[in-house]
Length: 235
Picture 1 (cartoon, rainbow, N blue to C red):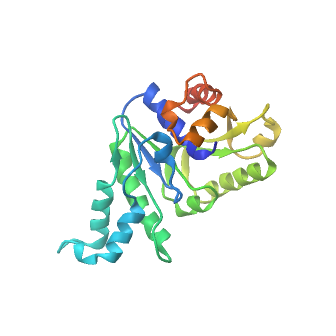
Picture 2: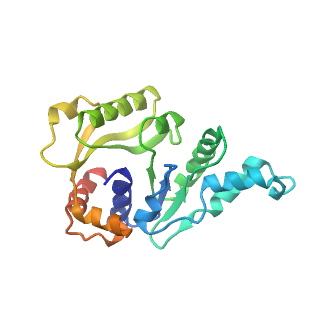
Picture 3: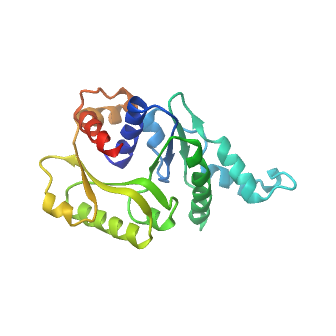
C-alpha cells in the first residue's frame, strides 16, 4: 500500500464526503492510479507526444505543435460519473520527460480552474518537485513509511519544496503502513505537520492482488477508517 493507494482513497473520500467535480492526475510514468480507481484512461500524454512525433502531418494547418498537443490532451481525460482521470504515461525517446512535464504543467494550470478538487499522484522521490508541475497547492502531502530511510526522504522533499518556493497552504506527512504509535520527536524535525498514520491493511492488499479497484474496499477496513478520520483535518 503506497502513495497511489492513498491518492485513490482520498479521491474516493472526496466523492463521498464533499461531492463536486474531481480530477485525478496520474503524474507517475508508472501509471496505476486509474487501476486503483477503476477508471483507466485509454491514452496518456506520453501517447499523444509519441503520436505527434510519428505523424506530424496530423497537425492542422495554422495550428502550432504545442497548441495541437494541448488540444489532444484535453480529449484524453477519461471522464467518469464521479471523477475524471488524466495520465502522464511514458513517452518514448531521450529528453521526452521535460517536454511532457512542460505540457502537464500548462494543462494543470488550466484544469485547476475547471474542477473543485484536483488530486495529483506524483512520482516517488524528489525529481517531480524540481519539475514544478504545480507551483502552488492547498495541501502538499508527503507519504512515507516510518523507516529511517523513508523519513530522510520525506525531510529532503520538505526542504526541496521550500527551496523551490512551492506554495502550499499546508504541508503534511502521512505515515503509511504503520504498525505502531508514531515517533513524534522524529516527525517534528521534518518541517512537516504530522497528519496521522494509516495501518497496513490486508483488505487493501487482497484487492490489489485480485486487480480490483479500491471502490470495492469495505468501509470497515482499517485503512479506510483511518484515512476517513484524517480527511477532516485535510478538508
